[in-house]
Structures are given as C-alpha cells and as structure tokens.
Amino acid sequence: MSQAASITIGSKIRVSRVRDRIPQNLVNLLKEDSSGTVTDFRTVDGKGIGVVVELSNGSTCWFFEDEIVPA
Picture 1 (cartoon, one colour):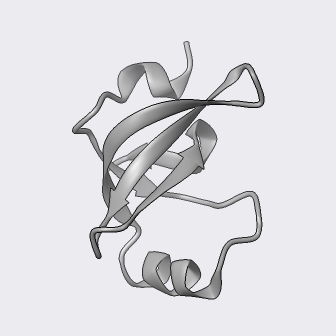
Picture 2 (cartoon, rainbow, N blue to C red):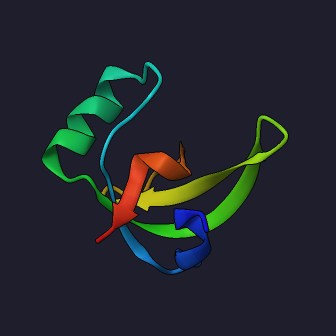
C-alpha cells in the first residue's frame, strides 16, 4: 500500500526531500519550516499521485508522495 493511502485531505505532513529543482524561495521556506497541510491530490506522470500542500506561509505547492511523511 502506498504512503499516500494513509494521507488524507487535512493531514499534517512534513516535506522530507525534494526530487526536482525548486525555486530558491521555496528552498528557504522548507529549511525554515518543512511542515504543511494536505489540501488536494493530483495525478502525475499518468500513474503516480501528487500531494498538494499548503505551506506555513499560506502558499501551495505539490510534491510526489515519496517526498512527504506524516507530521
């Protein structure tokens, strides 16, 4: 069973890693506070699940399911 199956909208998570290059301001935000709240899901690559997360500054960003862990 995938980790995303245990994560639902409203779950508190922590971003544990990031696979792709991201903007420096997002890097700085995640270094300061890597926690957030799941607000939605999206299909990525036609088969994977992406998790949309509201971060501490109120912005949203999506992450692959293997980039987050429950908080």
